Amino acid sequence: MSVKNKIIILLIFFLILSIYFNNCNNEKFIQIAHATGLSKNNLTYTNNPENIDFNYNNGFRYFEVDINLTKDNILVASHEKTNIFTYRELVENKSKEKYVHKFNKILDKIIKYKNIYIILDIKQKYNNKIIKIIEIINKYSEYNKILIYSKIILQIYSLDDFNLIKKTKFKNVLFAYWKHNLKLYKVKNLLQNISNSDKNLFGISLFSIYTNSHPKKIFDYLKNTKYKNKIFFHGGLGNNKNILNIAKNNYNIFSSGKYIKI
Image (cartoon, rainbow, N blue to C red):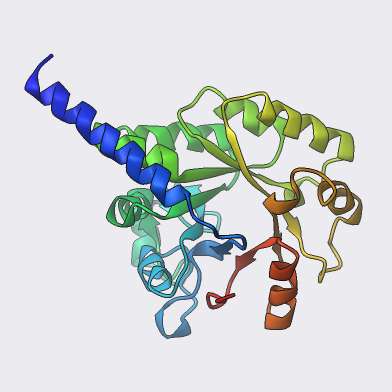
């Protein structure tokens, strides 16, 4: 074995150790910074890598990012529909999108901090974007590829989405119930498929109990199963009292506000 290969193996070993110890925390209440969270000076620039720096320093370690493709097939962090514009058009005309950043700028934050997780909300054409995401990750070094794959959490909406990523190197998934409002039997089937795979179910997101869209039947089922502590609420969480009540019951949140110290 060459010296270079030995060094790569050692680096991978220490990376795996660091990932393990970073994951061994006692955090019972997880807060995800929705669309990368608040901006500096409370500006509304979402999906901005600079927000990750700002919110990391305030306590967040989990960041949700919306992913879209431009007309010229550039993967960007954006909530808005971007496929009718080229990347250059988006950057030059900020009235369409205040800040548009290429996806690799988000991945660079994983390499910078090493103990953060990025939840990817993939907008439309799921399969095309998964292929593009993998293509971009594969441009990184072996060490960084392992790190990135371990720190990305893919948001899925259905069994079809899960089947698309089942054979990829991604380790973690988050099931977003709210998008398709699946029947309970379909939810059970999806969760069973995840359990039977090598993927880790990081969480299940639902509209919170403080919204009219809260799926009571699904929630009543999940809260009485092993999935209770994997429930993430979003919506209706502008009130700190509501957030503290959720934390008290060992549920988690998508946050658009400041990090709450419990």
